[in-house]
Length: 398
Image (spheres, rainbow, N blue to C red):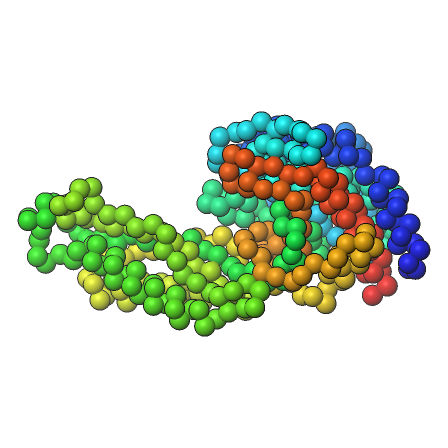
């Protein structure tokens, strides 16, 4: 396609994106309380909204019956690559803050993370349909629950992927704006229980043949610290080093009690190329060795949040993303690390497809003070629609 066609797309998309319609969609989603595991209401709202606008809405379960997901496929005139817009509609478990609009911002629970971003993807889908932009391919929109840890484990999206609700590449409107994430670490939550057989007693009555769980816990922390030093040698220029971290440690009920158990929590983060099963096995081997050395029972959980992530920079999606920014007069985003784990990690690990996390400028995620820029919501909707046109056109000729 020639440059004049691409520039015509930019102008047409700019006229077609409806700011009021976009904000109203975001408000409707943000007005429904949807903590992780209980996002059925907001998913129903989105499904009803899209159906009322003439889209054919599917409600796949993805292995989670309480909150069926939403899926809409918009096909072009010819078969070709499928670009997926994907977002979660569940929020962290904090008190609900009702949405509110000012001249520049939308505030309220889930506005930044990431209901407003999903609304921008919906607006982009509308524009793709109105302008017939995906002539040589199609767009798939999906929205789901079970994203936010520790209440969710990402399993509904994994289920959707297994059921075939997956494109050849994905755009995720999460709140990452000023960098193109090229690499991201995987993450697991570590939960460990260190215990002995007897009941808690006064320190002067302690059985001499039973291990001190605090001493055993201290030894475990020492070994984890040493492991973390070793992991620092595994690093990526964008994502940083692998790590193991202890953030909580608790034992006993009073200063002179010989406690029966200690528990600690932390994280393990690893780079792409590392098999997460091997990462878990290494962790469990360390627990077993510490148990043998201290005499205490040490039992641990390895709760996977997301696997590691890498963006193949030669993928057509990256080309379309960079081209869209150039056509809009925006600079090429620097490549960097993904500071958090998100569903892009899942697309890479489970479906081996490129996924770009790029959403509207906002702040306050995981707090009571969430906000998102309305101007940037419009920009994201326009960008997604343009990427859909560029990506499907590229794929048809590839």
